[in-house]
Length: 366
Image 1 (cartoon, rainbow, N blue to C red):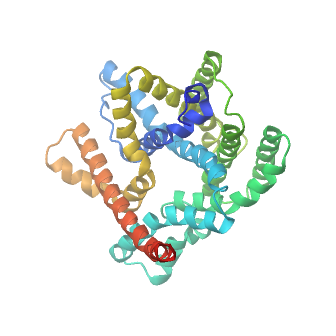
Image 2 (cartoon, rainbow, N blue to C red):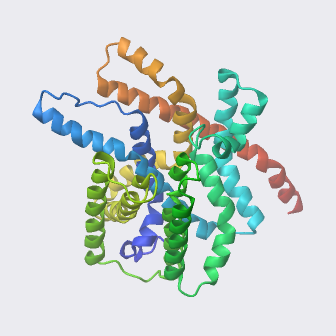
């Protein structure tokens, strides 16, 4: 992926700059949940216009989830080939459940959960039995996709026409969604409507391995730009004009697919151009945004599981210090980042302890 042809292949660029994409997605989701409007002044035309843009960007922040799922689908096509299915599950599930378990253990005594409530949240059971948003919904959601991925990929890998297979899989998803309307819990569509982007990610992951010599031209990126604009227009109608498809909660379907796919190609191409023409600023930007990308799950857990329940108290406290709104937003973001960084350090330490006996055993055998 680091050869000179990398810049000509959009799929390999997505993988090369995946931490940049994940960093942008993590920050965008954070903005969606906690950003306090800075330009909210209806009496002023300029600030009201800026507020409209600000609010549109904020409300579209849930599209960051689609970016994560797209990259996850691509990455899993590589991860599944590194060992047995058992080792695949061990690596994937330990990666997502360790930070999740840490924040769950912290919340247990604070919220005075019973043992059963703790087990419901720690295992993700409440995701299925209560409401997907009951506690840190993304972790049980992605764990579910990880669990079914090896079987899906086994069938997918045998298909001669993988584009057709992916299209048929999404068509099947659509038919099941229509049939289950009125039977499936409404909140569950926030998860199931994101399955197609995960399947697209798997297809892209396969393309990135099979078509290494494929060159992306200006025409390809102009098409992606058109897709991006179409996604923005549809997102506006879905979010501000109550436009809906026949499937429930469809705002997380078509607009988000168009935006996440186009942004993945456009952002990574811009990063590659910047790195080639201005190497030093490019590396700085890559590392800066990638800092949040590498601990994106910890950022999510830090806010959703630890800060969100006490967000209003925290903001009132900062407001009492007479801080401007933009300063409050910065303080909240920095606080989330610091907590996430501490969680990531703790996870690294625990993983080293877990891996230590196996490393000692290998050392003795040598």
